[in-house]
Each structure stands twice: as C-alpha cells, then as structure tokens.
Length: 203
View 1 (cartoon, rainbow, N blue to C red):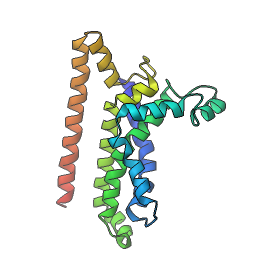
View 2: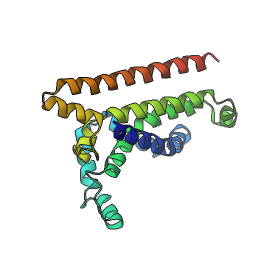
View 3: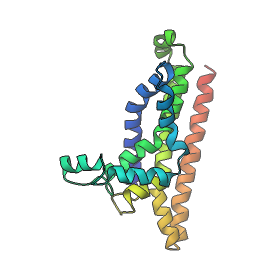
C-alpha cells in the first residue's frame, strides 16, 4: 500500500520541522508555561485514540474552528480527506518525535550545544529515534485516522483500517498478510534503531 507510506512520510517530515524547535524549547526554557506545553505534547500518549479522534473530528469538520477556515480557503472539508488525517497524524504522533529529541537536548549542557552539533552523537541518535518511532507509529495508527478520515478506499484507508475491514469481512488471509507486513516492518525498524544506537553510544 503506497498511500499509508505517503501518510507516514509526510507526517514524519512535518514532525521533524515542528519537533526540533519544540524539543529545544522544552529542554532549555525556564518559562512557567513549559510544564503545560510538555503536558499538551504528551497528551496523545495517554488519551484513548477515540477521544483524541473525536475532538479532532469536531475541530476539523466544516463547522469546526480549523475545518471552517480550511473550507473557506480551499472549498473542501478536511475530514474524510488526506489533509485531515495528515493533521490528525501529526498531532497523534507528536510525542514520538518530541520526547526523544527533548531527551537528546537535555543530555547536552546548553553552553556546549554548539559543540554537540559539531560532534553530533547525541543529537543524531535522538533525531533517528524520533524519525523511526514517528514513522512506525503513524503507519500503525487506527483510532484517530478512522475517526477523522473514515475508511475510504484510495483516500483515507491505511493499513490498520484495511486489517480491520478484512477481519470484518472474514478475509483472514488478507488480514494476515497486512498484519505480517506491519509486524515485520516494526521489528526490523526497531532492531535497526537499537543496533545503531548501541554502536553510536560506543563511539
């Protein structure tokens, strides 16, 4: 399925641009609002996906504060379209990118941050961890995408929803194939990540 890979790719790219400055802020800011921002970033990790998906559905539909603006600008709604589930995926996977990056920044004293960019070890490991976790997390997400995008062939159907649809149709062969692909991809990605992390930590 090329479409879920496209969703994971663009989600990861957007999260890189959002995650690095946000993680830097969380690592070094002394603002009284830092804890609140960190709590909001972590919220998708603890909220049930259906709860997050429900509120995103309200925000992104034509009557919602984000969806109504989008509809006025582009003449189509966000929900049940790729753009809508892309926004939902970015929010849902935000902790997967920000937490490793924040840990990476915090591992280096701020007065040595320029030197750490030159040496690159801590930052490189953190960025790679964030990228792998964000990509894999988006590829396997179900509840948020289903709530915001539904199950539209060629538009919003991702692998996890395809598995659900196949099981509902008692097509266990298709469900097994998709599940096995996701399982193998996850095992391979995490194994490669941990191997690289161990090698870099020994340098």
